[in-house]
Length: 303
Image (cartoon, rainbow, N blue to C red; front, top):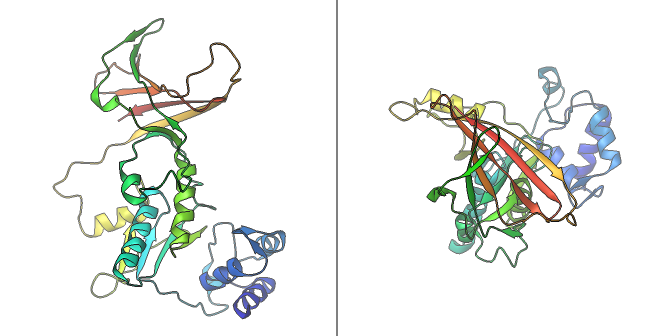
C-alpha cells in the first residue's frame, strides 16, 4: 500500500513514474483485473512525463532518482515466442524446484495489441507447452477439415493440386491476437511479470558484453534491438538473408443465415494473377471463417 501511495503522489506532482511505481499502481486498490480505472488514467494523461507508451524525457529522469528492478530473465516482446519462452522457463522452475524471476516487456498498450495475424495454426508447440490447452480454454475453436488451392486469372479460378505445406487437417483457424492474450494470462498465472506499454529502447552492454543475466529478444520481424545485436556481434555473416512479405487483410462481417452459409472450416488458398509475372514475384491470398459470421481475406506479396 505504501508503494502504491508513493507512486500516486509522484503522478500527482507531475514527476516521473518509473517501472517500480507503475508496478505499484498495477497492484494498488484502483486496479481491477488488470484494467486501469479512470483516476489512474487521468493521472497518467495529465503527467507531462508519462505518455501512453511510458516514454520519459531526459529532463524528467533528473527530477527523481529511479529505482531498478532486477530479474534473472528479461524477455523483450510479448508475442507468442516471447511468452512461450517465459512460460517454459517458469514451468522448468516448478519441475526442478528452482526460483527464477522472469519479466516480459511489451511496447503495445496491452498484450496482443500488435499481433494482427489471423492464421491457420498448427498446435504442435502448444501441445508441448500446455498438453491440456483445451481444458484450460485456449481460444482455438475452428478446426480445419479441408483445403483447396487455386490459380486465379481475371475471370477464372483453376483448381490445382494442393501442395503438402498447404495440408492443414487438424490445424485451427484462429486469431493470433486472442491466443497471445491467453498466453499472457497463463504466463502471469505462473509468476511471470508482464509489463505492457513498456518499449525497450536500447541494449545496454557491460564490460563483458552483457548487462543482464539473460535477455531474450522476441521482437518479431525486423526488431530494432535484435537488429542492433545482430550487427554488433555480426550474427548475419555467412547465413541466408531474411525474406519478408507485405500483407494486408480485410475482415468482413457476414450473415450466417445467408444460403449457402459459409464453411467455417475450409480455408481456400490461391496464387493470383498478375502476381505470377514476373516469376521472381510471388504472392496470393486466402480466406477463412474464424466464426460463422466473420470472413478474413488476407492478401500478401513476397519479396
